[in-house]
Length: 604
Image (cartoon, rainbow, N blue to C red; front, side):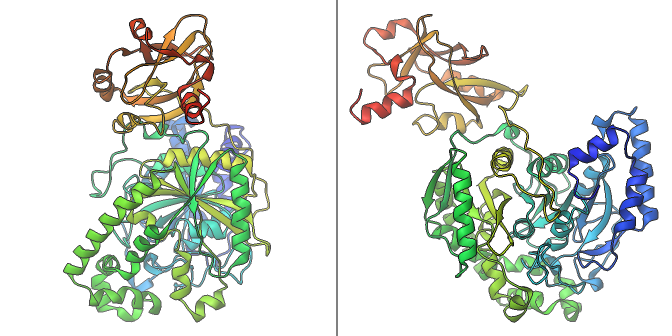
């Protein structure tokens, strides 16, 4: 089963070709105990015991595989995340402790039927983006061992890329769940902060940390995320997912912000690979919008040049004081900077971060998401050994700012550079747009099929991503005029946590009119039976917010039931006939957006 996706594992179990006990036996026989990607591999007896428990759980569920969505599927855990009864080292043997409970994320996965096979190597205390700061050895690139594999979640990315497990847990504070994905040709999902509980994780920067997911495909990464996500009252930084977040999608065509002047540090190979990736995304009909990233780079500088390094000190303060010699020299140097910081500087930096976030949020509001190179370049292990801090910092150029801004991200394979090394891009969006990123990622995977990590296997075709199903706590609303995306009243939807579903048209039974004297200008939609398809957008609005929205709709408009071109019926804007006396029939334009464009160009 090496290099198999979740769906392939499931099919093998459902078809009866495989049982967990036999699968784990075969897997254990092929594991290399001296592989630097691992800190601890479970013995065959432990894997058999887990397989037995999983088989018993299925029997207790009456053989219903749906109740164990990850039945018998092996995974790996970064060794700063707790597995019950197994030492957690954070890549520092002297720091090791024996947790009695599994981390909340690990517990959710095992309850879904997944089997932990081992703990993976990392940059010590999750401090680094290179995968070299560990007494357990450097984790090399899965494609060329001369190059770094990325960090800090180096081991987790490596074992997924080589097909040993179909997914693994990592962590991400400054890019540790994204850079290793890029360097090893896999998917790295960095969720919204607080979407996944951090209980049972050795913190790096507790206010910024996220448990991340590595997988071979977008579908697999998001499926694992859905299993581990959820509010945890024991985690003070856990947050409840907003209503309808799972239904979020980007508008079509999507508008993606790209760096106006990308930084490559002289790496022409990565520069050309990114240009090729932009061509791929444009084939999806995406509009690329060059943006000035200077505010993002200023925020990124706060992470290591500002007082947030003190959070890393707080995480291991007692250990560092008593066992400084046990800490990797580079990690010790970085965290040691906290000694020169004071509380006043921390508050000043937080004020600066908040001010910059306001500017950054306005920047990303101009587009649906950002599209960036995951890392601007890649270095050999020898190069990083010669300049361990300077070169490492360059790798975080497009990752360091994301958690400070409370945004989410999805790292995607984007082909290969001319030297044969993988190249990756990252989609970045505001908090709670995880589902929208995954939906776009599936479209990317379908447009630019990739190989699965370093296995050489072709990725299976990505499933078509249709409109999300209507959720019970939502109303699907068709908007036709000033509430369309980018229009003056669209904020009345977004302020109520409404999520975009799709752009479509009404049936041919409607006529559209430009109403006189409305501010801002609005159209009126009337069902006459002799009209034409009119462009509309569908938005899902939380049921609890729908009443206040309807109450604010001014006459002559109202909310009724509209018929769409495919026969569906949804709530939507209608107009009272008396308002049409002074209105202009604009049905021929096909929609309000097209009519306004024709007006600007003098054609209407």
